[in-house]
Length: 95
Image 1 (cartoon, helix red, strand yellow):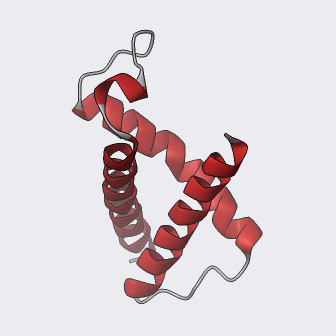
Image 2: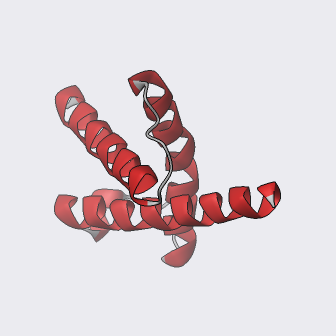
Protein backbone atom coordinates (compact mmCIF):
# COMPACT_ATOMS: atom_id res chain seq x y z
CA UNK A 1 0.00 0.00 0.00
CA UNK A 2 2.71 2.50 0.94
CA UNK A 3 4.79 1.62 -2.11
CA UNK A 4 1.79 2.36 -4.36
CA UNK A 5 1.23 5.69 -2.63
CA UNK A 6 4.92 6.57 -3.01
CA UNK A 7 4.75 5.68 -6.70
CA UNK A 8 1.72 7.95 -7.24
CA UNK A 9 3.40 10.85 -5.44
CA UNK A 10 6.53 10.31 -7.56
CA UNK A 11 4.45 10.34 -10.74
CA UNK A 12 2.81 13.60 -9.68
CA UNK A 13 6.22 15.08 -8.85
CA UNK A 14 7.48 14.18 -12.34
CA UNK A 15 4.34 15.61 -13.94
CA UNK A 16 4.64 18.86 -11.98
CA UNK A 17 8.34 19.20 -12.81
CA UNK A 18 7.63 18.58 -16.52
CA UNK A 19 4.82 21.15 -16.50
CA UNK A 20 6.99 23.77 -14.82
CA UNK A 21 9.78 23.23 -17.36
CA UNK A 22 7.35 23.20 -20.32
CA UNK A 23 6.04 26.60 -19.21
CA UNK A 24 9.56 27.99 -19.64
CA UNK A 25 10.24 28.22 -15.94
CA UNK A 26 13.42 26.95 -14.32
CA UNK A 27 13.23 23.45 -12.85
CA UNK A 28 12.50 23.27 -9.15
CA UNK A 29 15.89 21.71 -8.56
CA UNK A 30 15.37 20.06 -5.20
CA UNK A 31 13.29 16.94 -4.73
CA UNK A 32 12.25 18.13 -1.28
CA UNK A 33 10.81 21.35 -2.73
CA UNK A 34 9.05 19.52 -5.54
CA UNK A 35 7.55 17.06 -3.04
CA UNK A 36 6.26 19.96 -0.92
CA UNK A 37 4.72 21.62 -3.97
CA UNK A 38 2.91 18.41 -4.93
CA UNK A 39 1.52 18.01 -1.42
CA UNK A 40 0.44 21.66 -1.35
CA UNK A 41 -1.33 21.35 -4.71
CA UNK A 42 -2.91 17.99 -3.87
CA UNK A 43 -5.40 19.55 -1.48
CA UNK A 44 -6.57 22.06 -4.08
CA UNK A 45 -6.74 19.40 -6.79
CA UNK A 46 -8.80 17.19 -4.47
CA UNK A 47 -11.19 20.04 -3.66
CA UNK A 48 -11.56 20.96 -7.35
CA UNK A 49 -12.30 17.32 -8.19
CA UNK A 50 -14.96 17.11 -5.49
CA UNK A 51 -16.63 20.33 -6.63
CA UNK A 52 -16.54 19.30 -10.29
CA UNK A 53 -18.24 15.98 -9.54
CA UNK A 54 -20.58 17.29 -6.82
CA UNK A 55 -19.17 14.92 -4.22
CA UNK A 56 -19.85 15.44 -0.55
CA UNK A 57 -17.04 14.81 1.89
CA UNK A 58 -18.71 12.27 4.23
CA UNK A 59 -19.98 9.96 1.49
CA UNK A 60 -17.04 10.24 -0.90
CA UNK A 61 -15.34 6.94 -1.71
CA UNK A 62 -12.87 7.20 -4.55
CA UNK A 63 -12.77 3.53 -5.46
CA UNK A 64 -16.55 3.36 -5.74
CA UNK A 65 -16.75 5.90 -8.54
CA UNK A 66 -13.66 5.37 -10.71
CA UNK A 67 -10.94 2.87 -11.52
CA UNK A 68 -7.41 3.49 -10.30
CA UNK A 69 -6.24 4.49 -13.79
CA UNK A 70 -9.17 6.89 -14.20
CA UNK A 71 -8.38 8.48 -10.85
CA UNK A 72 -4.72 8.95 -11.75
CA UNK A 73 -5.65 10.42 -15.13
CA UNK A 74 -8.19 12.80 -13.61
CA UNK A 75 -5.75 13.87 -10.88
CA UNK A 76 -3.10 14.59 -13.52
CA UNK A 77 -5.53 16.72 -15.50
CA UNK A 78 -6.63 18.62 -12.42
CA UNK A 79 -3.04 19.13 -11.30
CA UNK A 80 -2.20 20.60 -14.72
CA UNK A 81 -5.21 22.93 -14.52
CA UNK A 82 -4.37 24.07 -10.99
CA UNK A 83 -0.72 24.64 -11.87
CA UNK A 84 -1.66 26.65 -14.96
CA UNK A 85 -4.12 28.73 -12.95
CA UNK A 86 -1.58 29.24 -10.15
CA UNK A 87 1.18 30.23 -12.56
CA UNK A 88 -1.21 32.71 -14.21
CA UNK A 89 -1.90 34.32 -10.85
CA UNK A 90 1.82 34.48 -10.10
CA UNK A 91 2.56 36.10 -13.47
CA UNK A 92 -0.29 38.58 -13.02
CA UNK A 93 0.97 39.50 -9.57
CA UNK A 94 4.50 40.05 -10.88
CA UNK A 95 3.34 42.43 -13.63
